[in-house]
Image 1 (tube, one colour):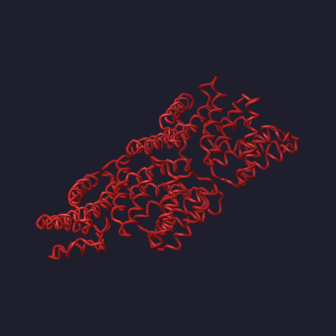
Image 2 (image 1 turned 120 degrees about the vertical axis):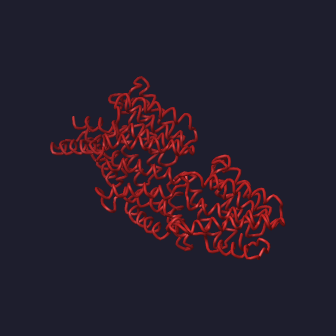
Image 3 (image 1 turned 45 degrees about the vertical axis):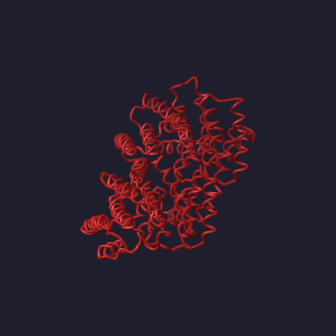
Length: 561
């Protein structure tokens, strides 16, 4: 009875209560000195719950206990239960060759004699698919998820089916099949709403829909979905701080992506304050909060960012979630690079890259870390090494990846300082074209590329620079007018755009317009200085204005660029 209760609680997303039910079932069976397939199944499902909660040591222990129990009842090593338990155990030991050999055998055995009672085989296949997905083998994961769905095709309202639809939907989204993924999410949501009403799992799917909106750049819609999900959780599971924190993390990430690091930081801090009340300081969820807070502060306060990220690395290094550890090493490396501590940046990014390559953490993530490592080499003057790594990044990234723009932009910088003007301009334009298509013209990343193009045009003596900076000033003003924008960054961008517009006029010989533009830029700087906590203009920019307005109208030079 306790085992069935645990399975039901697991199916409806009440994980903590499910853990308690399975633990009591195991305790009862062990007191009775029972050795059975039922006991082994309890250990396996308890291990699955711990794995879901990222409690890796506990998951590993339960899978080992399942294998010990199956051996005690002389279970055939080719039995589905033994094969799946072996696969899970090997997965957590990083023995991937034996892991997938066992899971493939289990998959084949299920296809011959599936167990339909309580959707057991459908559940087993779903867990197998999760492991394929965790290793980045998305095509195989989707195939196994679909096999699981085939076993519940006659039960369209099955909660197990709804759970599988949710997970395969996420796989399709990762595979860039957005419409198919959304259809799966909607079907899953329909089943769970009809069966559960407002519930943890409904909140989970609503959160996922929000994440899809975020992927598409529809941040306000995403934030609306997160608000709904948080409201449901506060109503049905007010003490489940981990699930609430995950929704708040998603909210913060959406704000960070739309260019609101201050709003993101406040969201992440809210999650941290909530988790700190009932979690140990070295808990994995606390580590995640530290990680997110550090990421939000990377452009604001490098000292605090490093402290949060170092804490996250310290906690995550004691657990066995290598993907999370790689992520924290990556962002700590970024913070170190921004601080100019290139040796420490290289060390952390190399650690991240090593882990991501070893655990096959998706080519995009490998490329992301390799790109940052290339930036470190570029900033240390190792242009040859940097260029090779940038080119490797392009080979790893899909044709439509927005990150290709980051790589092209960095390659433009590399060519700029090598005084290869035509090549630099080509790379900047490639970066801008990708960002215009993916993010739109009125996005700070697109504006950054436009600014780099204009600077190169001035240095090449081209008349196109004036039109480029006129458009840039208009774009930056539009970005700054958005209430939710990164206000500090927007003001700096407006100031630089107006300064550069003055330089473009000066190069063309129109000193009156140049002086007017520089005065406007200086006015922007003066307004920024009135509210210092929102960011002062860089000293170099102040000096540029003073010199220009003081009558020094020498040609725009490379050092200032």
